[in-house]
Length: 197
Image 1: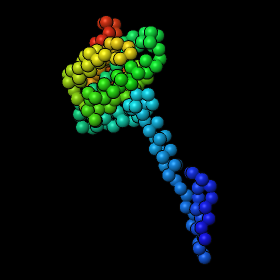
Image 2: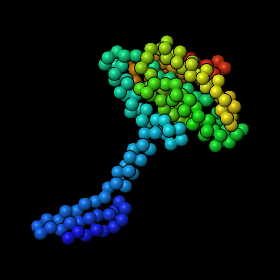
Image 3: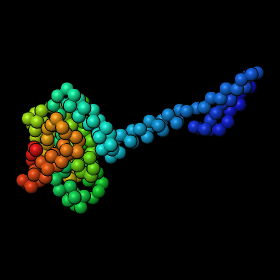
Image 4: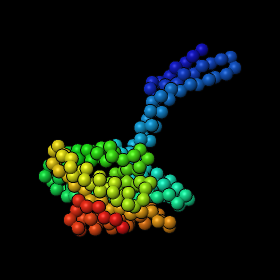
């Protein structure tokens, strides 16, 4: 005898044998929801790149590798110059489009194993397994690439970058402090620049 109860994720089928009862539950929708929640916990909903939480988890792996094997690692933080003016002049929807397009542009220029995430607002972070000189060159190339692209609704956008290299006793916090200081220096020196610390 088979008895079926409920619909959707609550659907259960119970099979009665002479001595056993077997209950089966349809978990298709539950599994799908679990995948969606996992994705939301790892990715920024607007830009579709990693969010801050996921970046924090993955950078730990890169830091451990750099500590144990002595490999190179650079940390880059950058943001959009005068982004508030974009929102004030064109509106929040255009501001959102700028963030999405910028994320897509950066993704098209980095490697698959590079970490790229939205840090918050108009601020982004990158972690690359390379030395500071090559990292500086890449950051500067990204800066130029952004400036050369026309953002359909907002015109030309520029970004300022701060970059630092992993040192033996570093934590993510210590790298953030140095890179943030370099970013501040780039802003002070006229924006649309890359500075290293």
